[in-house]
View 1 (tube, rainbow, N blue to C red):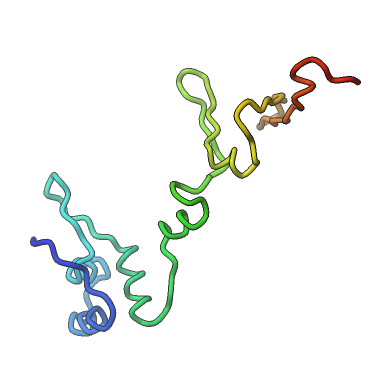
View 2 (cartoon, rainbow, N blue to C red):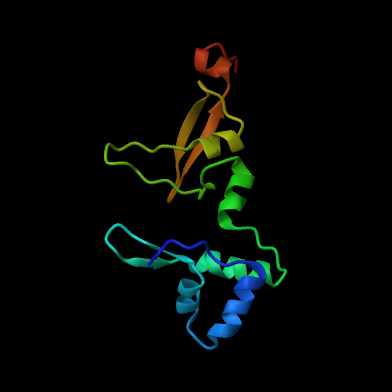
Length: 133
Protein backbone atom coordinates (compact mmCIF):
# COMPACT_ATOMS: atom_id res chain seq x y z
CA UNK A 1 0.00 0.00 0.00
CA UNK A 2 1.57 3.31 -1.07
CA UNK A 3 1.74 6.32 1.19
CA UNK A 4 -1.08 8.68 0.12
CA UNK A 5 -2.13 11.92 1.70
CA UNK A 6 -5.52 11.49 3.41
CA UNK A 7 -8.47 13.06 1.60
CA UNK A 8 -10.01 16.20 3.07
CA UNK A 9 -12.81 18.65 2.29
CA UNK A 10 -14.94 18.18 -0.82
CA UNK A 11 -12.70 15.39 -2.12
CA UNK A 12 -13.35 13.38 1.06
CA UNK A 13 -17.14 13.86 0.88
CA UNK A 14 -17.17 12.96 -2.82
CA UNK A 15 -15.16 9.77 -2.18
CA UNK A 16 -17.52 8.77 0.65
CA UNK A 17 -20.52 9.18 -1.69
CA UNK A 18 -18.76 7.00 -4.29
CA UNK A 19 -18.03 4.28 -1.73
CA UNK A 20 -21.66 3.87 -0.71
CA UNK A 21 -22.35 1.57 2.23
CA UNK A 22 -18.95 0.33 3.39
CA UNK A 23 -17.96 0.06 7.02
CA UNK A 24 -16.48 3.18 8.64
CA UNK A 25 -13.16 1.38 9.11
CA UNK A 26 -13.02 0.43 5.43
CA UNK A 27 -14.04 3.95 4.36
CA UNK A 28 -11.28 5.45 6.51
CA UNK A 29 -8.75 3.06 4.98
CA UNK A 30 -9.86 3.83 1.41
CA UNK A 31 -9.71 7.59 2.08
CA UNK A 32 -6.11 7.38 3.31
CA UNK A 33 -6.59 7.41 7.09
CA UNK A 34 -4.36 4.44 7.79
CA UNK A 35 -0.73 3.49 8.16
CA UNK A 36 1.31 0.32 7.94
CA UNK A 37 3.23 -0.73 11.05
CA UNK A 38 6.74 -2.16 11.01
CA UNK A 39 5.23 -5.64 11.26
CA UNK A 40 3.13 -5.01 8.11
CA UNK A 41 -0.17 -4.58 9.98
CA UNK A 42 -2.62 -1.93 8.69
CA UNK A 43 -3.72 0.52 11.40
CA UNK A 44 -6.77 2.68 10.68
CA UNK A 45 -7.07 6.08 12.42
CA UNK A 46 -10.83 6.45 12.83
CA UNK A 47 -10.48 9.49 15.10
CA UNK A 48 -8.68 11.56 12.46
CA UNK A 49 -11.09 10.26 9.81
CA UNK A 50 -14.17 11.35 11.77
CA UNK A 51 -12.59 14.75 12.47
CA UNK A 52 -11.90 15.21 8.75
CA UNK A 53 -15.48 14.24 7.83
CA UNK A 54 -16.90 16.71 10.35
CA UNK A 55 -14.53 19.44 9.14
CA UNK A 56 -15.54 18.73 5.52
CA UNK A 57 -19.17 19.21 6.55
CA UNK A 58 -18.31 22.55 8.17
CA UNK A 59 -18.20 21.43 11.79
CA UNK A 60 -15.02 22.50 13.59
CA UNK A 61 -13.82 19.98 16.16
CA UNK A 62 -10.68 20.61 18.21
CA UNK A 63 -8.59 17.45 18.11
CA UNK A 64 -7.40 15.92 21.36
CA UNK A 65 -3.77 16.81 20.50
CA UNK A 66 -4.70 20.48 19.94
CA UNK A 67 -6.69 20.47 23.17
CA UNK A 68 -3.77 19.13 25.21
CA UNK A 69 -1.30 21.54 23.59
CA UNK A 70 -3.70 24.43 24.14
CA UNK A 71 -4.13 23.63 27.84
CA UNK A 72 -0.56 23.18 28.98
CA UNK A 73 1.62 24.30 26.10
CA UNK A 74 2.71 20.73 25.38
CA UNK A 75 2.49 17.19 26.71
CA UNK A 76 -0.40 15.32 28.25
CA UNK A 77 -3.15 16.78 30.35
CA UNK A 78 -3.11 15.79 34.03
CA UNK A 79 -5.22 12.77 35.00
CA UNK A 80 -5.11 13.54 38.75
CA UNK A 81 -3.97 9.99 39.44
CA UNK A 82 -0.53 8.66 40.27
CA UNK A 83 0.87 5.19 40.82
CA UNK A 84 3.40 4.01 43.36
CA UNK A 85 6.58 3.03 41.54
CA UNK A 86 8.41 -0.23 42.23
CA UNK A 87 10.87 1.61 44.43
CA UNK A 88 7.96 2.81 46.60
CA UNK A 89 8.05 6.41 45.42
CA UNK A 90 5.20 8.55 44.15
CA UNK A 91 6.06 11.12 41.51
CA UNK A 92 3.88 14.18 41.03
CA UNK A 93 4.31 15.60 37.54
CA UNK A 94 5.04 19.14 36.48
CA UNK A 95 1.47 19.70 35.26
CA UNK A 96 0.31 19.50 38.88
CA UNK A 97 3.10 21.63 40.31
CA UNK A 98 2.48 24.32 37.69
CA UNK A 99 -1.27 24.27 38.37
CA UNK A 100 -0.57 24.79 42.09
CA UNK A 101 2.14 27.44 41.48
CA UNK A 102 4.73 25.38 43.37
CA UNK A 103 8.41 26.21 43.28
CA UNK A 104 11.53 24.07 43.75
CA UNK A 105 12.17 23.64 47.46
CA UNK A 106 8.52 23.86 48.58
CA UNK A 107 7.92 21.44 51.47
CA UNK A 108 4.79 19.49 52.34
CA UNK A 109 3.31 17.74 55.32
CA UNK A 110 1.70 14.43 54.33
CA UNK A 111 -1.46 13.27 56.09
CA UNK A 112 -2.88 9.85 55.40
CA UNK A 113 -6.63 9.37 54.99
CA UNK A 114 -8.75 6.25 54.47
CA UNK A 115 -8.24 5.98 50.70
CA UNK A 116 -6.23 9.11 50.03
CA UNK A 117 -3.36 11.28 51.13
CA UNK A 118 -3.35 15.03 51.61
CA UNK A 119 -0.37 17.24 50.90
CA UNK A 120 -0.24 20.42 52.98
CA UNK A 121 2.20 23.12 51.95
CA UNK A 122 4.42 24.13 54.86
CA UNK A 123 5.59 27.75 55.23
CA UNK A 124 9.34 28.35 54.87
CA UNK A 125 9.53 29.62 58.47
CA UNK A 126 7.97 26.39 59.80
CA UNK A 127 10.48 24.29 57.83
CA UNK A 128 13.44 26.30 59.17
CA UNK A 129 12.17 25.85 62.72
CA UNK A 130 11.66 29.59 63.20
CA UNK A 131 7.86 29.49 63.22
CA UNK A 132 6.22 30.96 66.26
CA UNK A 133 3.10 29.35 67.61
